[in-house]
Amino acid sequence: MGVFSSWKIQSLWNYFLPFLLMIHSTVGNSRSPLIVLDQYEGSGIRLICTSETLPPELQLLWVDGKGQELAAPATTTPGNTNIASSFLLQPGSGNAVTCRIVSKVTKISAGSTSVIIADIFFPSTSRWMVAFFMIAVLGMIVIIAIFCKLNKNRWKLALSDNERKATEEEIGRLNIILEKEKVVSQEALKEVQARYENTMAELEFRSAVSHAVNITLDPHCTHPKLIIQGKNRVKLNSSDSGQKDLKGTLIAVANEGFSSGKLYWEVEVGGRPFWELGVLAETVRKRLINERLEKPLEEGYVSIQWFQCQYHCTGGNSLTDSQNKECAVVGVFLDFEENMLSFYDVELMCLIRSIPVEFFEKMYPFFNPGSDEKYLGVWHMNSPPCLASL
Image 1 (tube, helix red, strand yellow):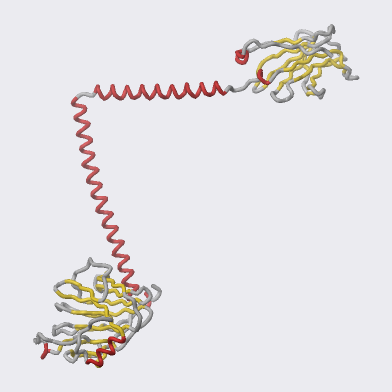
Image 2 (image 1 turned 90 degrees about the horizontal axis):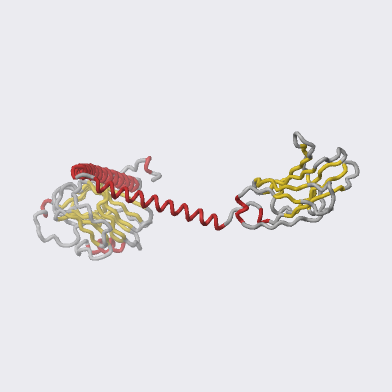
């Protein structure tokens, strides 16, 4: 077997130049093959092993550093008797190969040449080259950006006064159109919001109506100056309507009392200048009966009053204070689950006031018709079946 040939690479620039290196065996054997480093191919190096005037019984065979055979077909160069075999050496595969001349029958070597190629000679991408490439690309981007900026400034300076004026007029016209579109969009948004709020208010109102109950007035808990008609209508006695000093609590209390659930009833208040609707505690109701309603209410009740063209809440603080429009029919919603007493404008199906209340005992509706001679009527309620699930 021949002795390894050694080569000294003078410069790393050999990576970028095609090269041809010939490796000879130092043994005085005329049949030692010649290994040529032909070219780079992908990430490896293409090796060619040649031998002149090789007898037919011999062949070229590639083996690695461990003596394992490497498959590589032998070819004959057209026009002469040279036998050549090529092999692609990949990095990391041992980097040592041997080309042998062996007998086709006995596999005995008649001559060989070996070569070792260090990893540094295989094609690879240098980190310095990547950094240089990135810097070059960034530099080109910066140069292009500066060039575009200079051209933009030069274009602005080249505009004539007439062109600048026309541009400003166009911008002004577009701004006017934009402002108009903005106003239209805002108005449309407000309209959608108003519709949404009205729809939610109507749903809330209809949900309250689904808990309707019928209310009747208790003659035994009604002020002596009031007249009850048909169990659900009350007004001031016409003979007393001119009196200015009406003492006591000028109200009529309902027969029905409630301590749980959700209850709703409606009252026709008409166009009277004063009225009062609310609920009072059972203990207050008993005291009023004992005193024949000769003393005014002081505590234990929650109500809403209409006078001086405004709504006024007593016995609690209202959560809403936006509706002061006079209404003809008032819906009263008593919610023990939410601890809330709410009043609705039935015609508009919107909330008038909501008053949070802590209920500790049974509550009774009460009604104050004021000094007007018209009847204040509690409507008979029929809960719509379709609202029972709300």
